[in-house]
Image (cartoon, one colour):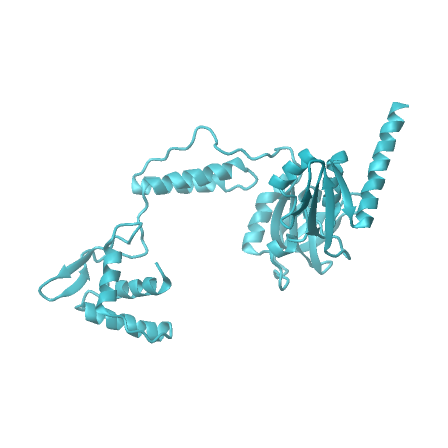
Length: 340
């Protein structure tokens, strides 16, 4: 259903609710033409055939139509609503809709960071009771997310989520590792989960720039009404995280092509599950595969490369290759010390 058809249907609905008028197909078409010119600035010449199709769509049962109780008066050749209390926007819900709501609720309950499941469950109960439908919650979950109830900072997720949705500033008592705690007022933009840790990305009014806050380093968080929410021009979550793996964006670094030579078995995993959306397969032989990604190198990328051990060798950039080599050498040295 295109926008113009929906517009005409709403015009026709508005007309038919004026029961004191006699609405023919001609007068309904004229009303649609007038409203299109007045509200859409469109010079249209809708015909009675167009209106007839719209009336047919309105009378059709959902999901094809709206189930509108339109009556045809053959004597006067007019249309009206048989039920004067009918409202076009009050679309019916069916048992299938309750099932879909149950499925959505099940997914939310599988990720208990957000305290939404109780409210949605109550809403589902009210809808089912109002419509005399039956709820049938699943006995066993169909989807299980990997999470731990013991993750520090998890208690802040629900409150920060609400602040993000409402665009309300928050005051954080925040202490990075090996640094003193500071109090910062933050305009929260988005919550992001990475590697089973939660992070808040927002504008720090103290430092006047976008910063990343690990939730496990938050000591206290509360709503702060004395500061107006600020959205930095041009910020968009996808574009912000697009050039990196993980959540950290090192200052002063630029996009670079990172080439990695990987062992055959590891290559199969990386080809089926790319480490970044920019990943390309440059070469593949029986002995190795060469992959490239275009990213801003950060600590998450380094940890990922180190986790591959002997299966991966950085070919470029040279500084990253050298840095990974030094870390592996240091790790190997510690193992050698442990055997002496």
